[in-house]
Image 1 (cartoon, rainbow, N blue to C red):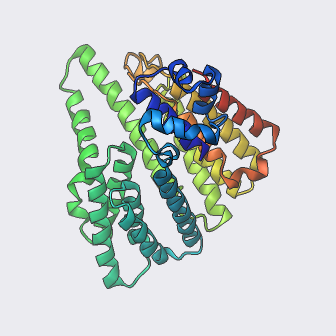
Image 2: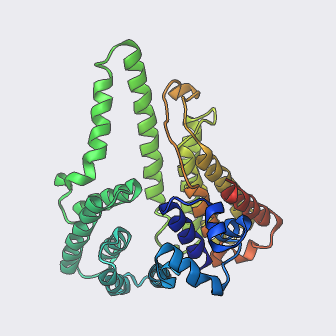
Length: 361
């Protein structure tokens, strides 16, 4: 709840064009107090909340963002039950659970995707399977239209292809599922038609696009979000993710990852979660260290020209604000799964570095 207060106070202040010092003077408190509120290090006194609400013209509930808190609690509980059903191979049970929450939040692309995936994975008789695949395909197509999240779109295209394949329509895959692949193939075919420097740069761009495409295919092959029924499978999933990381490091051999720092952070972060499941704590801590390193590098990246051999001269104009990758990792590290290493010196050091980095202006 503290995080919602800090986030909303910062948002309300900025919307009204006020500095922290100006807000502090209006409330009769120190600048340091306001700074600590917005960093989530402390909260305003309860007696101060009515004055803050009046100043910003909102209710106290809006300061706490109670609707968002309730929504997040609802979704967290749903995700817990979804995971339990996956582990017990009761995928069918997830369909009514997700549908109930989706009825409450009908514009949530994430919930639509999860419902579509549950329909796809559901183990039912053959006639129902075809019907379920059709429902899943409609949900994935709707998510593609609604979301701006490119990774979510890519995941939907992947599942759309699988739906087409299993329903016997693999020869006429959904248009949305092949757009990105078609564009990549077109660029590869056209590269030879360009001349001299333009040709070289086009080919380098194609090599970069193909490598990223292959790394993402390996991620999908690992399917880390779905089912860890046995230790051997967990180990295999982590090995796939490490292969994807190695592929990216092969391409950017000079360490000029820029925007790809985020993909590497995600790969190491998810690998750490799998290692924890497999009780491979030392490997989990090493993966967390690398995830944090790449998260902070991504959030600090301004982008520039690549220096690695195969992509030399290509530019990456990434510009990141509000440190989203580091914030995501920090929130994931608060999960119960890490309780077994939470007091480990390495883990404490990683959390400390992330906190300093996130709060550093």
